[in-house]
Amino acid sequence: MTTPEPRPGFLTGILALLGCQLVGEASVRLADLAFPGTVVGMVLFAIVLGIARPKAGAPLTRAPAAMLRHLQLLFVPVGVGIIANLHELGRWVLPIASGLWFSWLVGIVAVGWLVQALLGFGRAAQERDVDG
Amino acid sequence: MGDLSGLGATPVLGLSLTLGGYVVGRWVYERTGRHPMAQPVLIAVALVMGVLGVFHISYDDYMKGAGIIGFWLGPATVALALPLYREFALVRRAAVPVLVGVGVGSLVSIGSALWFTQWAGGDETLQRTLAPKAATTPIAIALTQSLGGLPGITTVCTIVAGAIGAVVGPWLLTRIGVRDLRARGIALGSVSHGIGTSRALIESRTEGAFSGLAMALNGLATSIWIPILFR
Image (cartoon, rainbow over all chains, first blue to last red; front, side, top):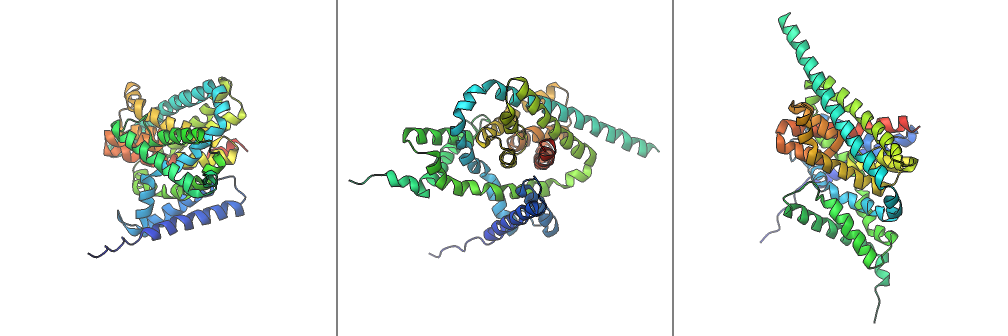
């Protein structure tokens, strides 16, 4: 029995992610911006993907897709950090519940209505164009 | 007889606890028929905290191994470019609704989180902790760390905001008359990130695509608004 060839390209994706993050972290430090370097890295990687135009399952996207599939694993260590805040958590049940629930509610209603209204305006404008 | 006290100094403890907790979390999630409230990360966090408490393992010892997993949050944030790239064509189809909707929506989410937290008696640390909760979790964590919030609480609250969206989001959108699939997707992705997107995908391919796009753009918008608001 022969060992199957390892699927190539996994490391390409990892290196691309780390490279974009590195450039992102470097640029926010150089520009002295209070902006997460990883988010700059995300924009850079989106540009790289836009230029490379990889197909689904291409080497460049394989590792990133795998990481997104198990994204929740990566939150566990930070989440466990709540162990240091159990005292605050008890004291803050009400403001946390309020900030979380009401803000979520206001947010979803605002975006839902706003986007639906904007889509409606766009359609009306297009129809006017067609009608001359 | 030897003793286990040196085990805490090796990374294998935190690594295996984290991975083990997550595997059990996934299993429970599947067993509940993927109920949105049974998010694997919430189950894993509770289990790991239980083990640390029972065996008197300090968080610092746990992080010697868990930090290795936590490091990959950075590259994973970069990987969010993938949904952005995949669904970007949708921006061209409806640029104004998508960009204005997500841009205004993220400002409303941050502003209302600040206001409602203070209104119910929270202090500034808690405001900083909850401000980025509508963004996708890795970005929310990065933002709360830069603001001096409490990342553990941010993580749990962000996940819960996602779960609320998956449970009541579609029902609420129907109730308030938002029937356009694009608007529904953008609304769900803007306030409930990836967990809302999973729910949107169950409703329709279009709704899921717009939700994924809104999740990525909202992460970007929240990162822009927060440093401006907290300068």
